[in-house]
Image (cartoon, rainbow, N blue to C red; front, side, top):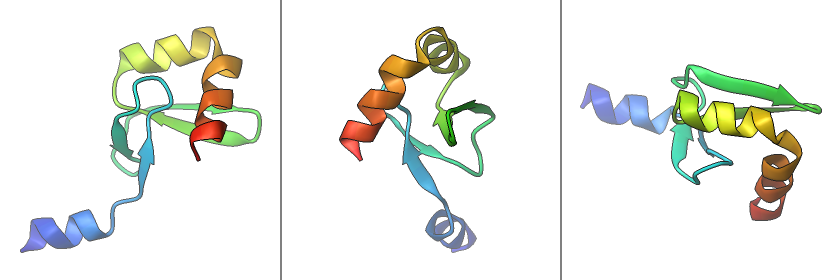
Length: 64
């Protein structure tokens, strides 16, 4: 039951690179671009984003 209450408090967002759902509070992979913070499922997605943040931040804005 404790696990369910933790999931209810999760702040979920979408990894802009791969589209996977990510918990903002648990993700160790984060990047700031412009005035927005982005969260990632893996170091690989973070690295991909940081190579071309304009591409992925635009895609994330369109998906929102």
